[in-house]
Length: 348
Ligand code: TRP
Image 1 (cartoon, rainbow, N blue to C red):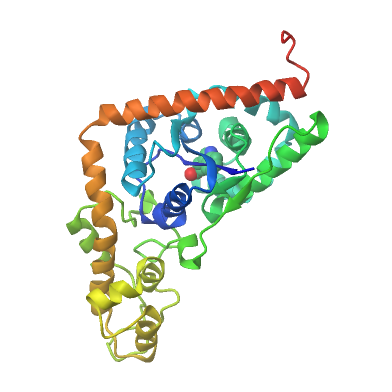
Image 2 (image 1 turned 90 degrees about the vertical axis):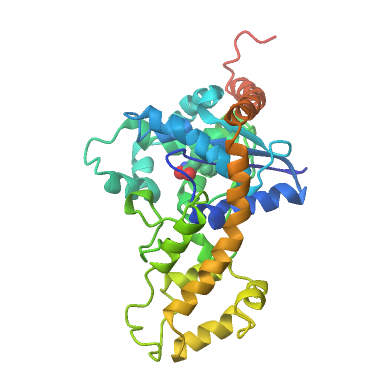
């Protein structure tokens, strides 16, 4: 049996290079590997609404942005089904049945949800929709019988929760659903790319992101302004490459070909790091090289994005078609779920 992929993103902003190395790049590779029977890429608008219910316009506008980012990175609607979550109403029905299999205490223990609750300052007034989004995420995955979910590290608790729900469903009602597993990036630096300011995570609210849609000038300005090692004051000072976002980005993005093309005095990143660590390599030079690497990586993505942005009607048409396809598959699973639960009262 071939494998099935499902993954997705909340449309709350344009996608950035953290999304790219953390998941997007991998999805495109998996898509083009031909090893997967089906690939579903979901724009999680309903999940985005769980903490943006007061701003549906924002979610709507960002559906276009995320779809453009997908296409720009090489997700191909002829190979992958790209769809909008809220258009597949079967997901909501599945969520309702899965809710019976999860306790409030279990949801409150989910570490990602816990962190988000703190960040958003919900206090004791946690919206139910928000608290239960891991259940709806289980519906997203299981509706397509996905066994492979390429995501960032922060999504691991969601996958754990999904596996628990699947086991409990199958145990109660008989083998129906497929247990999914997460696929994380192999390169550690890609797991969680820090912000340009050195903060642990890229986030729109911190203003420390490099977006896939950024212009050449914006990329340059952001790279040249990046946080480095604060103790590396003089060029001759020994420097730290470990917690230094410029080197973490180079870990994630640079190749030996980049060195040959832009900085031939080193053959690879390890040589450059060794020089920085013993002293004698200035931040300016590191940033100039990083800028060359980022420009080369992002220019073709940006060009494709601009091309697709010329015809937004075609983008929405693609999403409509993908959503209709996804709905058919989810309806099939929902029928199986109802049968397993013996609530298919009017079936033959
Ligand atoms: N939670 C994911 C995010 O914040 C989006 C998402 C929703 C998702 N449903 C999913 C990811 C199912 C993987 C599988 O970006």
